[in-house]
Amino acid sequence: MKKLSLIFILLVFAGLVWLYIDGPASNIKYSFTERGIGRFQDSIQSIKFALIADFHMRETPREEITGEQETRAILDEFMNSMNTDVKPDFIVQLGDLNDGWFAGSPTGISDDLIVDRLRRAQKYTEEKTDITWFDVIGNHEYVNGYRADLSVIENKDYSNIYKAINESWSSLEDTWYFRDIKGYRFIFLNTAYPNQGLSHMIPLEEVTWLEEVLEASDKPTFVFMHVPVSDGAGTAYDVAVNQEKISELLANDDSFVVGFFGHSHHSDKWDGLRKQLDRAGNTYFHIPAPHEWLGDRSGHPWAIVTIEPGEDGLTVEVGTGVRRSELVEFIYYLKERLIKIISRDRGIEL
Image (tube, rainbow, N blue to C red):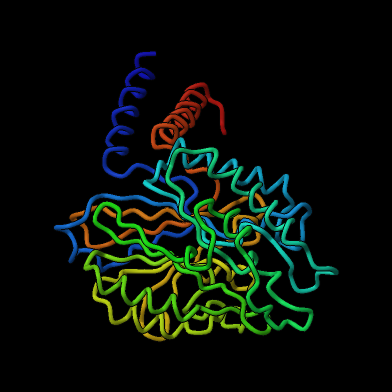
């Protein structure tokens, strides 16, 4: 018994040292360290933010997209993790809250159904946390902006859809904005506006706005979008007209650090789109949809970005499932170790 007590004490001490030095992060599949933040050390604070993309809220499943009941369970898991374990400074959802029309759909859907899906998606997320939440609009929110021949419906009123995504939005111009937090500038773009052939575009007035916003700040800058400006999976569906203008502005801005996008989960190689450079050399990270992760329907990915002053790199982690807190992880580890020690002491092979 004394031997077991001593082992227990040593394990607790080792565990506390482990937590202090480098506490475990459960279920992290990919972790990147992106350099280039060190030059801002004198003006920034520690920060952590979470990203999730492509909820695709719909009533019944299709292909890899889950139906509403399973999607709600995924979102509950995500929100629980945010509230109890991760506790980020803010959360960003990167678009496609609603599933909308898709290639192969037998019929179109109404704006009212899109609005209803958007409101339900927000109910399962924003209403379940006090953590600040920022929205990016996706292409599936705009699916009813097309005629049967996939030409664009001009001057369509999206105000109800905008408001369902974010109650402070009422016009196109509301869908791009920025926030300054803890010494950083975070810019949220609309790269999903309808274009001919069910593709996308970035309005020219948004490009002008972005140029002014970049020029007015020397804060380290991060950019969030739905459709990538870095070509994503390399298909026409992953292109936004005027994307080269965005890339050029970011490349010429000394304060730009990295960008984040969703959308490209539709490709067979979407799980490989974790880090990507655009043609101007800017860096972006792809955040995959939460419905399926590397072919595993039991794992649901989201990303966590952490920046600590005094270090040159920012950490981007993409993982699955709930990230248990260090304390919970250690208790689990301690329990498993004790079971093995006690079993071995009793001559039991595990």
